[in-house]
Length: 123
Image 1 (cartoon, rainbow, N blue to C red):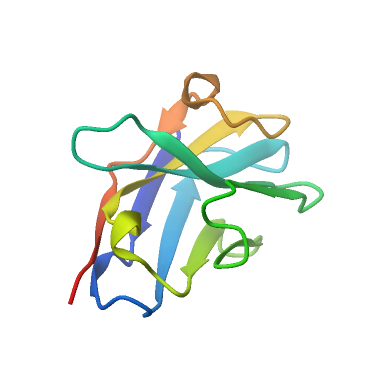
Image 2: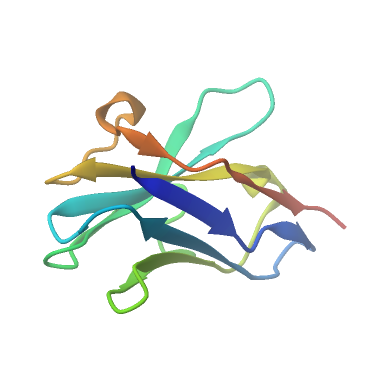
C-alpha cells in the first residue's frame, strides 16, 4: 500500500519561503515519478513540479519556474518542494502524487495521492 504524507504548509507573507515535504512508503520508488500539484478554491488541480526518482530529472510549471525547486532524498524516501518568492496566487492546497515511470503533467496520470497541505500567502 503506497502512502504519501505531506507536511510543511502554513501561512507566509508575500515574498516569503516555505519548504514542503512528502514522505513516501509502501514500496520501492526507484522507478517512480513524484510530483506536486496544487488546487486553489474554485479551480482545477494543477501541476506544479515533478522529479523522476531514478535519474533526478525535473519539470516545472511556467508559473513557478525560477521560484520553486523540487528535490529528493533517497535515504529518507522523501521529496521536497522549496518555495521562494511566494505570491498570493500561490495560495492553495498542495498535494504530493506518484506514478510509475516518466514525468507527466496531467493529474489523471498519477495513481497515488497524499492528503494535501494548505499553503496560504497573505499579509
